[in-house]
Length: 153
Length: 375
Image (cartoon, rainbow over all chains, first blue to last red):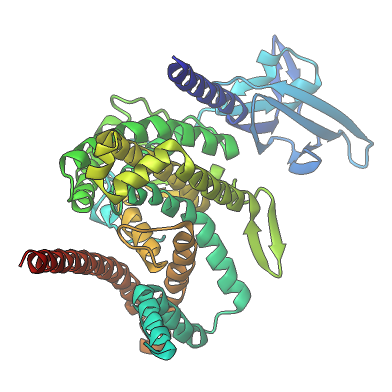
């Protein structure tokens, strides 16, 4: 009985650790857009310059119509932005904390939208990479060299 | 008998039982000045390869303890680790959580494969090494079937950068950049230009302590008893088959965990070849450290991994310097790996025969004594 309990306990602990790893290790790529956003008939204009920082490190320096990116692990993401609306104008600083959807690998955040206080579905969308057209003639199947045992150790 | 002849005999015994490590030390001593690598570079490479390979080699100790010889079946654990890493890459689990999750996923796969291997090895008693070697070839075929045809079609794989363009099967190379050196970079310290990955080293040390502790447990004692004499162990009430089976399962599971550590260091996985020679290179490294088919220690692992991989670092450059052709050095290191295993197997068989002959002589002498008494 003790043995069964011990084994069940070990499996349970491993499952719990695995579940925790699933959540804290989920990687996302966040794309920051400094682009115009149309929402419910209103246009939210891109600004002259936005500098994006994550954990105090600048990850993007965006002019109008530009996109930057950062990666993060876990389900929450914090970033800071420095907004410069006009040439030689004063900088405005904002901090945001996002809760990231688990199912999205790439997430696009529209910065003019988030700065305007719009709801999340207005400024957050999924980044879907362009599908690779299947090339059956030149399909890259593993060749003999891929089964070659000689490799770096 | 004079003291000098005794010490001379001891020296001969020492050299004959440590001939392989001594040979490697000599090769390295010759190659180092030829190659001219800086000490910092050489040490950095040795430390990197030590942290990459030591855990895998440690996984070989337990079957040797149980008298099952060198477990070529550790390749099965490596395959389990690769399957686990394909899943974690597809699920986009990055960093240390990705490594830990891959280790956890590899455990049940390694256990099932280890059970299968152990059952077969129990049936092929006395021929464990060749059987485990052939099992690894057989399982390689099954692995290819799963990875090349079932993943993406039956087993869900979402990301196109992992799948082959045809829509199923895994690409020849899986990018592990997101977990690359994530263990090695934690608590890494730089001493005199040599980067020491303290967390990985701590995991290896912890594994050594677990092995030391395991030897003292009831199961560990049973394994040693089985390793020394199966029939005596059976007479003492030990379930020999079960003990041998457990030793192979433990070894396979540890090999799976070791392979995850190995691949996180590499940062890239050759899907169809990463595992294929890992068993042979690990076994060669253990033998270079002075281990034999029936006796191996943690010291052999450490010495072996350092000597074997130092030779691996030096051989291509030495080959290039001596002959002008780096490929000769590459051939040399592969040739040495096979050669060391062959020498170890010959030495083991010779020792076994000598022991048998010695036993026979003792028995004959005892019989002669008995006959003399009766006469």
